[in-house]
Picture 1: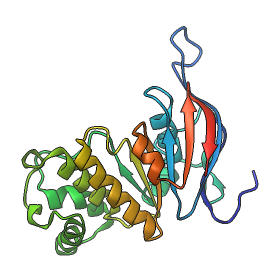
Picture 2 (picture 1 turned 90 degrees about the horizontal axis):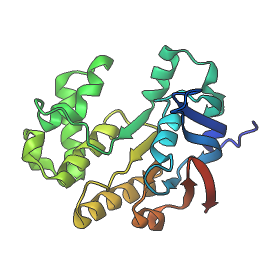
Picture 3 (picture 1 turned 90 degrees about the vertical axis):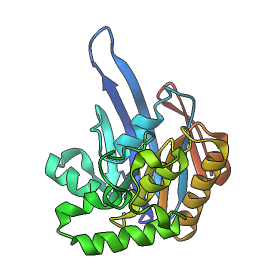
Length: 230
């Protein structure tokens, strides 16, 4: 596959099957080809069960495809070892639908625990968490526990955690689905600001507001690409 130099992520005829070959086989993604340009805000849209989350996991090297190819900065990830894929994931930031915060840790510890294996000192991590929390209007929550936060606040903490390692691409799975309308607008505004600063953002969502903020979207249905628009 010939990739333009501005393309950071791409797939070619990628498929992901679960319980392959059995009577209960699920074809979560089938024959999808797409490209994500550096600096874009791209939305993967479609109803629940359309394959959005699985496709996002393939793009983020969280899953290996059953067939087809996934590219990161022009390199086919198919031949990468598990260790090499882990290195790729360290260059990406992930925001999960259920926030995935650790209840026993404070907000700043949740934001920066992925930095611990990199040997970054606690003082530097604390400072970085404070900067990110101030950015998202949560500076006074640095010592709070997740249970003390609203859903919108937890999602902003999850967003701060995804940015702590200064990733090249941010991937967010249904970032507004568990939030009330006001909190959802706040999170979308934060994602728009990140895009305006030049960061590459990829969202999976069935929230119609997401299409309004994205500069490119791919619509999925039944695991297949239904249409794309930019």
